Length: 432
Image (tube, rainbow, N blue to C red; front, side):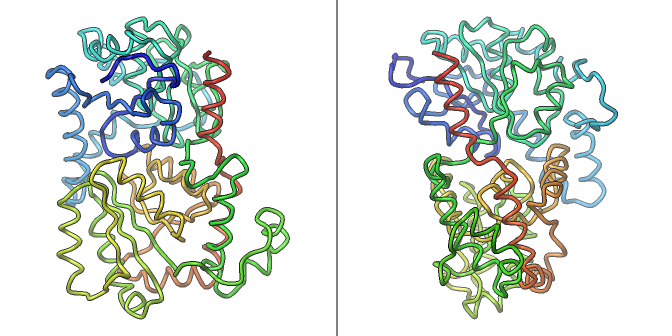
């Protein structure tokens, strides 16, 4: 990690290289990051071996159990034991939830033993404010008396108690909340109003445009044409559409497209394959395009190449793959602009419904995804998947009825899209 001062950049931007969620959340904020880079707290140049091993053990356990979860009974049992430590308690009745849990106490026990000291010492040589998309680096910085402001970006629609330090009343960590559910949960955990900013989730600028949102609005105009082939939604809500988006184009600029996003642990690959088999006749007749988004894992790339080559679907099934995480995010965001439906487990990608892309919700993994699913359904921006073996039936029922168009518009209207700009504005106004 380069520690030379750069007066043109504003913050240390920190994430954890554990799946894609925390890195995806940091990616849109690189414009205000030192050297335009995201520091991977668990995998930076020069990280002590003991720190790296500790992070690696935590990640490996979660990914193993996520994959193991697919095994009947034993997988669910193993995951339920792990999930107890990250379980989000019911919101009602409203009560004081500031008491720290066992997981949080263990985190601080390791921090007091020196976990993360090297990382914070390096940043302290050029003590810019810190923005972390994972709670642990924020805790490390505060525990080691970091001399500048510490911010934490939350990447789910609700959060476990572990996201807030042991004694929130004395903490100086400030939180960027993506939605009102998170804001209200932080208050129950004891975080003061002054330390909570309701910014929205940081969506990528290349999918939004400037603050006038010209890119996302233009993409939405074309998407509605594909999502409402029988014009049922448009006939009912023409004044709303024109008031928000203006006049729609005469015809789409891309074929009807579903993107299936596979999570970092690869746990949904069988669901995706069943859906492709169900939709293969539509794909072969050039009525539907499928994008399989697999991240940077070579084994997933090979899995899909081996399993779809016999279907002879040519270029209408595309495997979206990156050589690095940044390369993957760039390709992913570009592909989203001509994606009509996003099929994914309800991870941080739940907030991408704000781009006007309806979410088909794959089975959840973990308590935080259960709450993300509830949030998506609550605001009407997603729909639960039916049996993937019969995707050809239920997907086209949703499409032909105009339901997918309605879901797309709900996400576009209900979800804050300027989270990246809001965070940048707060940093510029409050930190310097």
